Image (cartoon, rainbow, N blue to C red; front, top):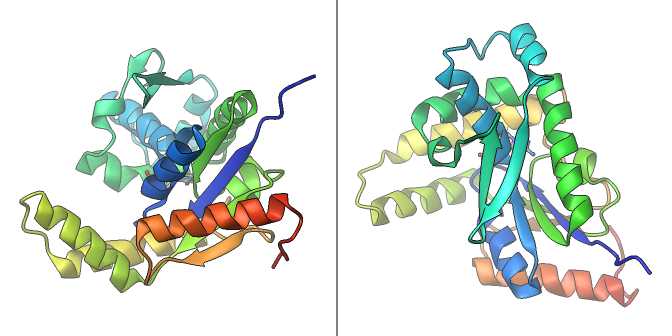
Length: 231
Ligand code: DC
């Protein structure tokens, strides 16, 4: 008999802690995680490295068809390769950060990334984290979670993280960036950020990460027993 492959689809606003929650959940379940933003970031890094104009939507759309994207787990860490190059070390730089929204909104790019995501999710139990996982990528997933939190809370968390790293961040700038990213994600023409109809929406503003994880696991287990009432 075929083994049943399961997934948890986690979507949500920027800076809400999706990847932290996804990793903690995966650890508890013994599953892998797929951070899908990293794929959009790797494509952006690849295009920027070639000095391409990432704001030229037609050009990026044409190139997207021929990109060869691979996600590999090396010593348990997700790496993204584009055309054979491991771009994992270049995903968090300012240039990628500023340009990835232009790349992520191109339909041909989303189509390409969707196929990669589905192929991975079909092969093993996985927690997939992104913006359109429950709505577009894995609409049949039984476990859809949508995380949200007050933008001020998200900005404060980010501020503290950067301070802990010895940086001197501007709270005003962090807050403005979060509002800008929310706007871009929610108003995108394709795959805008919205909770799937059957998603379990969790407002994490007043919650610690371990509380969010416990709540999600309880919700999933309750559903498995057929006791959970859907929204
Ligand atoms: O989650 P992140 O910050 O690494 O995402 C990087 C960019 O990719 C951001 O602009 C949102 C976009 N993204 C997306 O459009 N769809 C996803 N499933 C994941 C990320």
